[in-house]
Length: 76
Image 1: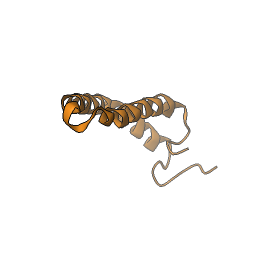
Image 2: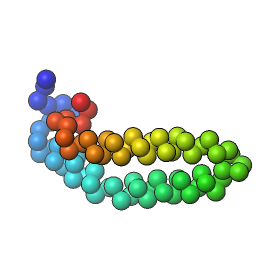
Image 3: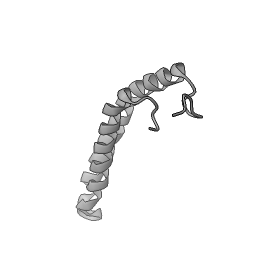
Image 4: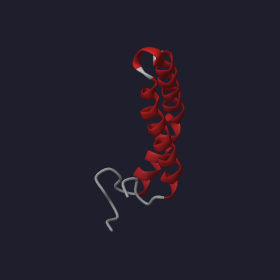
């Protein structure tokens, strides 16, 4: 296993990445909420199936957020 990568070179870069992820979380959650409201509002015209990809991406983002502190590198 390599100690560095092009994205995260050392522990300092990793801490910065984790800190930035923590700071943008409220904006990311707000964007998911706006998308959900828009898809619910457009449901009768576009179809209710359009909510499924949004729910799936929300679940995947939540799982990634919970796993990120425990991973040595974000891409492993």
